[in-house]
Image (cartoon, rainbow, N blue to C red; front, top):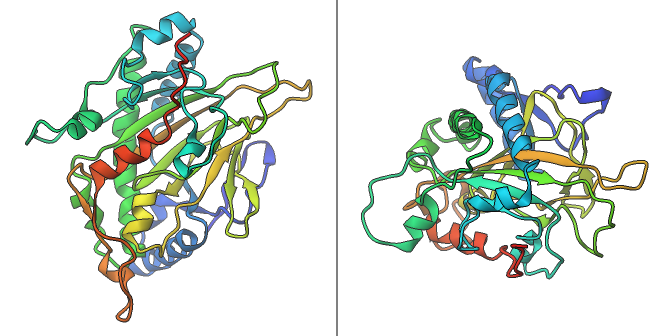
Length: 343
């Protein structure tokens, strides 16, 4: 498995290997089996990998990145125009201190030192009831008036992420000795979400225990992260308890397993805790950092039960079946900070 070429010759930690996606998609059966075995080993131990040769045009990535940076540069009063009246709504603008991700683990910490903008699915399954759970996942996105090209840029990006996520799931299915299209039937109308995040530069030291994003795991199937290529901050917790810095990568995505996927595999694969630290410059100031996280989740009505290939003959499933839509709502709302941050 080749290692990613890191910006400024920074080398990846050996704990977070890289995979060439096209080598799997275009490879013969022998090559696919080899890569699938490597993926299985990675997902059993750390649950994070770097996906190279992903096929997403640089123009789409750079366009979304630039439009979001322009949005975060707007005055707070302008950004708040696309904030939901419901603090539990996962769409729209989230000001600094609107979340405390460590609370999803029951850890009481200061709110996270970040602001973000989120959108949900661009398409929805036919509505079969008046459930508020459905509205939570498939409600209208809250688009800002400025920048003018932001909506088009993010729509292009989300469509590209859906395609990439589907390809990654083909590899994951092979790694679990499943037909490559196994996960597709569970992701025909995915509860996907894009969260664009700005960790602002600050001159005031963070509060004790305050981070850019507190220690947490992701909730769904898989996450595709486009991280800042120049500024570090993402840290991953190894099974030993050691925190390691994720590498700085240019033309690649960091992919990690979510809690639903771990549950699906009966914990054969791990959903690893991670956090974002506050990178400090030589002058002592917290350095600005940006990222775009795409959460690819199952269908709203998918029942997550133990995958048969993840259960030995003498084993029992660790978890009861769970309805994906309700599970994700409970996890998301547990991280929302109740503090009024509108001013």
